[in-house]
Length: 296
Image 1 (cartoon, rainbow, N blue to C red):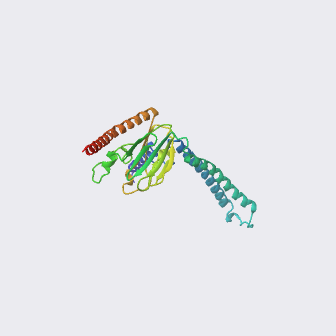
Image 2: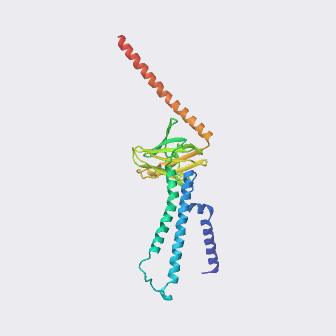
Image 3: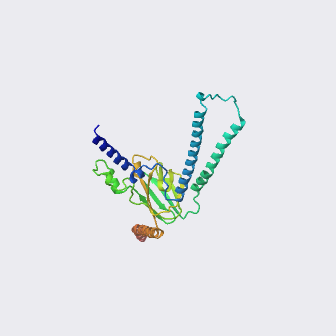
C-alpha cells in the first residue's frame, strides 16, 4: 500500500476515533445508572455504586487469588494435590466472609427500599390514571384535573406516509400537550392506577417507576431538586400505541406553580359556568311546566 494512502487512512481513523470520543458521543454511550434530579434517585444511584464497587473488590480479590494459585502451584513446578478432605476452619471462614458481605450490602439496600415506600410528609398528592393511550392527572386537594396526550407535532410525524422527517421534530414521541406541573423541592405523592389495561408511569430522572393496574392504586413519591422538564414513557406494554403515550413533568418554582394552578382553577370554573347555567335553565323550565300543568 502506498505511503500516502496509509497516511490518509491513518488520518481518517484518527478523526473517526476523535469523533467517537467527543463529548456528545461519550454522553450518548453512557452506560452507568442515571443520577437523576430527586432525593430518591440520588440515594438509588449511591446504593448502585456502593454495590458495584463491592462487587469489583470481590472480583479483583477472587481472580487475583485464582491467577496466583494457577501460576504458583502448577504441576510443572512440582506442586501436588492437597491430601486433606476437610478443614473446619476454612469452611467457617469462607462461610462467614460472604455472610458479612451480604449483611453489609443488605443494610443500605433495606434502608433505601424503606425510604422509597415512605410517602409520609407529602406536600402534594396527584392521582395518575393510565388510559389507552394517554394519562389523566388529578390534583387531589386542588380540584384540578386534565388529560395529557402525545404532542400534535409528534402525532402528525408518526402517521404512515406523513412525509415528516421525525429527526426534525423536537422531542419526538417524548412530548405532550399538557405536562404534569409540580413545584421544586416539594415532596409529591403520586397515586398510580389505570382505567383499562396495565400501564406503567416512569420518569428516569426521578428514579421511579410504578405499574398502573386497573382497580388497584400504587404509590410512589418524588422530590425534584432542580427546575426543568423531565421526560419518561409508559413502561408497560399496553397495546398497539404503547410507544405513543409519553410522560412529561415540568418542575417549576413555587410562585410559578401557584400562578399556573390559579389559571387552571379559573379555566375550570369558566368551563363549568355554561353547564351550570344550562342546568339552572332546564330546572326553571321544568318548574314552569309543572306549575302551568297544575294551574290547568
